[in-house]
Length: 487
Ligand code: NAP
Image (cartoon, rainbow, N blue to C red; front, side):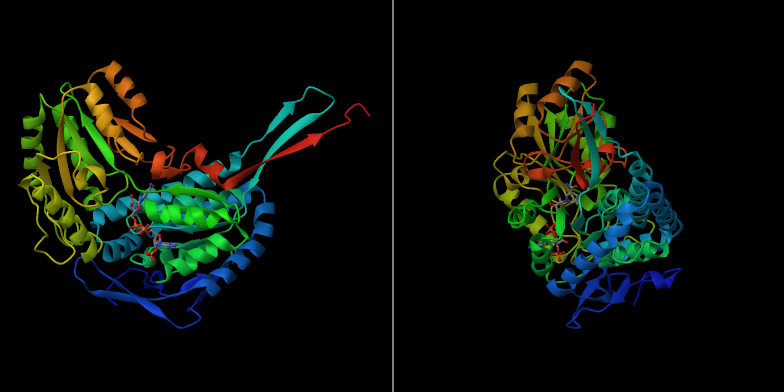
């Protein structure tokens, strides 16, 4: 084991089911490795459908008392969990950098971001209001909001902490129990989080974590088991579609946070330095592996050359390397397979006429590294326009009119985040309203926080995480009719 922690008991390698640390029934394990070095970090228990079924049954039992508690009592447990996450930030960040590769500074930032959802929903869970509806006759309609039931969650590796807390936070706050399958690349962050929830006093069964290398077996049980009332997923669009189909047979509620293909539209009248700073963050954060990463930079012809020159000069200052080293600005991508996939998209663009301004090759630091890249002479039929790149590659497209920019931005099946840079008030409104995206940043790319409704439209998904709207995904609306009031 190579991860050095202040509190080594946060490094868990078993599954956490019904309040107990357990091995998988078959005794199987899978390896977790450091993408920066290729070093083996841990062997983690691998569970399958049977253990998932037991976790779901335990969740169903545990929910009976949990949902009957006053919201304040649930909130108190979540507040303790939040404090423990904050107190253990450094260890959680070290675990994350080791298994995911992002820089330690980014990991610390993600732990704070993840903790903010627990805090927010501890507070917001106390504000689940209903309605009283005057009806046309001698009756009153009362609307109450109740927990949806047992929630099953599946999360990705790119944000191994925050993608969990923004599901577990609201689910637990309103009285649901949750069973979670983390990504196979990053189970250690999930296991450390549930260890802290357990220390906070969360009763057994309310939050089980099911690491495993057979995702279809775990996901198959989660989506077919009638006790599960809601499946919440963050990950790729193809897997999201599959899970939605699987959920249809038992008519489960679903929330889907899926892939993106974000445009950054930069108009001639933009503040160029502001736009460059925003585009750099939006493109290269987490080495290009965020769902709201800038995938396509759309730059108006009047400032195109100046943009490319200044943007590329800034990219040339990046230092890729091991996320634990202070000089590193950008870490590896998650796997060698991912690095090869990124390179194949760059090669496709180059074969079809793109120019590599900077980068364009795998990194020399190891199998999981890819050079920060800027491409020009790119066209709309290239894979870098049509597909989510999920790596540190910035294709810079040229447009002439506002109408062109809107058409290009919307020419995708995705609709998660879009960004607009302009100094014109009118244009910022027009373009924000015309683009088909769930979220729009105007002169800003750092748009995420616990207080805003995060989510997409089109094939980027459905449902919202964070904000007051984030509770709705875990609540059912019940109408109660009070009649014969004059008796
Ligand atoms: P992925 O391949 O879809 O995997 C996500 C999760 O789904 C993992 O836990 C994976 O398990 C599991 N999974 C895979 N196949 C499954 C199946 N047949 N049944 C049940 N579970 C299954 O996505 P990823 O590559 O990890 O994540 C990147 C994607 O997530 C990108 O498209 C990104 O845009 C998207 N994302 C979206 C948001 C958002 O809020 N919209 C946020 C972050 C990321 P294994 O790891 O065991 O395979």
